[in-house]
Image (cartoon, rainbow over all chains, first blue to last red; front, side):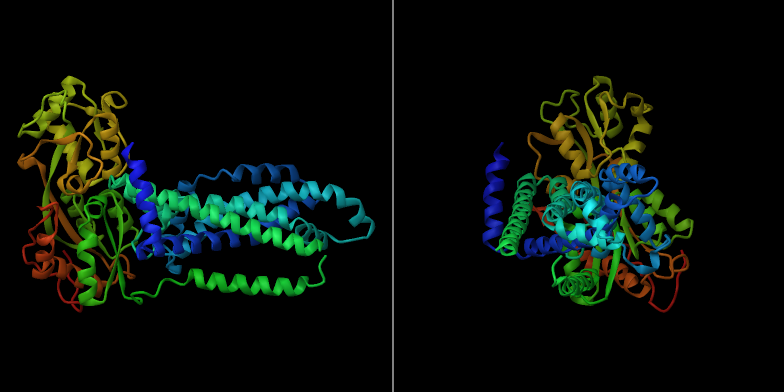
Length: 235
Length: 292
């Protein structure tokens, strides 16, 4: 395919020339997805920890629900949020539709269950080791949740990366609630969808390569952070 | 547990709050002066909007945020009040939209035409035909693959009207030679090229489409293939949030001498994509309300 060679050249050119439209799109993608992951972690991590640590009826059911919600279809979430944020919808007054804010909410909704479900698994394993000790010390449930979250922090960083992977790669929800508006809500994935529909496959592929590079860079950055942090912790 | 935990917590909460407020604030590039236009993939994919809108913004300071979807979805979104202006191409649906009170008044803006494109091998032998329904009949008789939008877009509505003239019900053959992609114009062209299928497209999207491969225009010039675009202000009586003043300014501009000249001047590969044909009708002043 001639498109691959052209795409490599184009991707290289776009990056080295510091194309301003591309920069804008990349920065918006990062802003939306990182904020969404942050929001999802604030909600998802405590929920995951609570389900792992808690001793309550329906805990098994909660786990099943969390795990299945990892596969929420983006296009359905997009549609539900469109209906919610639409002017004719219940939250229309917030004027979030067709703004990055709506895209953040959409991605956070998709990512939160992933964070919660994976955190539950990580903490469940950890908690088996700690359970007796914490109990004998008479540590309450809130304190227990905080403790296991803190001790699992490096594994949870990987959990948040899984969430980030979902967020940055997602197109179905953000194209509906964001509208793919140039200079306002156009992100990497919606730009790729647009260029594909224009038949500009080389440009679409070039953008795809850049998107993957960004994901690699973010993951490498977090890995480096983790390595530095754990070195200083055990020094 | 770390002794610094409360400090770290405070820092994390602070960072989080900062990131949130930063992320939810809408971009301040063109200030708050903007309108949302619900439009179609054909106007966006052809590059017309990218060419035209900056000129309007430069003159008026009003940013135009375009949501490009099919005509059906654009009208549906506008019905929900999620837009100030619609710029679409399915006159009967547009008139219905106005008749039902969702839009104030409809104005002609420009036209181009639909064409039938297909593989150069042309298995149904329709190349050069001037009668679109006759060409579709030949495609059906040959059972040659035909890619349909299969959505509720203006192009799809046109295709349905053409099939109606042939007395053939293509949907009875859906999944066999008749293939409904359920996607936008560009995605459907990609699919048609991939399957070697005929398809109906607007000329603007076709000229700007870059993945033509061995495909070419086979049928054109039928008066049935006329493709009229119209612009409508969403009715503020239904949705008080509609930005009437700026919406009217946009409609006046696009149907006025300046906007019309800009449309006529848009060329791609030396070809004019859209022909302006507004009948110098004015959307009225911002103070007076007009109901159509």
